[in-house]
Length: 112
Image (tube, rainbow, N blue to C red; front, side, top):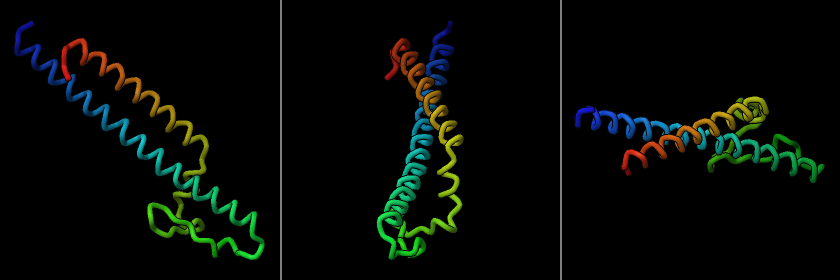
């Protein structure tokens, strides 16, 4: 293999690694957003169950520092979809495995 071919392979590996890193970060961020909504629904339900005097629509729900409406924001319903959550977890597992594999390949190629 010529030095140029070796350099090109290393550059491609680094690019692949950066893309894999970004994919893992994007998936983890998506999971965190979903978890935040699930947590908000959980807190909302706890408040409703412990206070008979409050109407559910009167309980404020906060997401990322902004007031949200559980009844109107479709992302709350989407967050509660267990099958989608399982698929997301599987995607995260696969993306992390790919990143781990690329990390090993970088080490073998003596790349940082």
